[in-house]
Image (cartoon, helix red, strand yellow):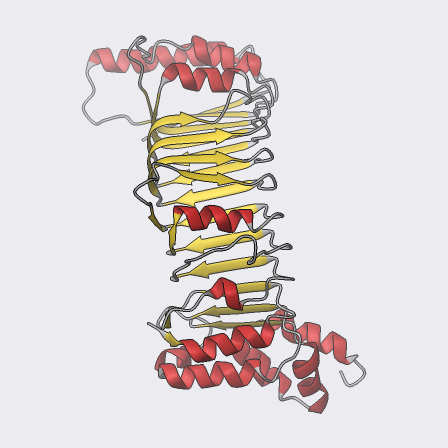
Amino acid sequence: MEHLPVEVIGNILSRLGAARDVVIASATCRKWREAWRIHLHTLSFNSNDWPVYHELTTSRLEILITQTIFQTTGLQSLSIIMDDVDEFSAAPVIAWLMYTRESLRQLHYNVRTSPTINILEKCGRQKLEILNLSHNTITGVEPSYQRFPCLKSLSLSHISISALDLSYLLTACPKVEILTLLSLDIAMSDAQTSMELNSPSLKDLSAEAISLEKFILEADNLEKLQLKDCTLEVFELIGKGTLKLLKIDDVSVIHLDIGENTENLEVVDVSNFTIMWTKFHHMISKASKLRGLRLWGVVFDDEDEVVDMETISWVGGLLERCPNLKKLIINGVVSEAKSHEECQVLANFTTSIVGLMRKYMHVDVQFEYE
């Protein structure tokens, strides 16, 4: 061990991540302490890593974090996840961010401060590539000044922010590829009726527990769209048909529009959702590259056409238009009390599907009833 270069020791300590483990390991000898001070690039303070964190007062915890951070130089990844802390004082948090801002590339932070500080103003903007913020307030975003030229991943969880500031923030991240929005408190001005986001670089959007009247996303290179537990009147995607994965789970939306070009769709996973049959069929019928389709608890709603279990022509059309499909899973719920007619419908449906699948032996079809 004594022949290990100090840079390698720094990498070893960085892989430990947890601040307590790093401090203990760095006490091994002078060389390891030197590696901690000069070559440590990853440091994490997580209340789940060490039970003693739960016993410390907030002021003692602030001192501990400050002393640990200030003994390092060149931190690239800093994580402060303290679920049991109601609020940190603003002064030490500003000190942590200002001390690391020149080298920081990843910041994961989920603690409130009193008084509230502008995290975007304090964290290092020039090199930051990943930013995960939780339980904070973001206001007064100025895209012409607060730019994040290297940011590729942005995650906002339980954040209070206006629709306009969120739009400005996305504009300030010209290279962002991954955007995660979870339980946001989105403020709308009297003049606003919709939240409009625009990002030519965005490839992956995940939105969960979002409530809006109208959500318009313009993203020419979007490949993954995941919506969960959202309540929307309108969701509209404006793009160039690059979408490959569509996942919808327990979403209430009156009008869903993902564009006309769906030929690049590879995976469609829809759960607990109501959709117009004609719109769904139109979307799927163009997806010639589809290789995964999962429908669970989906209700097809169409005023002009009644779709019942005996109608399976759309399945045949789907299989014909999707030559790359490998697996088809059919989920159903069978109640304890079934009439003879209902049992016959289920039997006829199963028989028809089995007969149809003889033409498509390369597709693995599975029935899952509960």
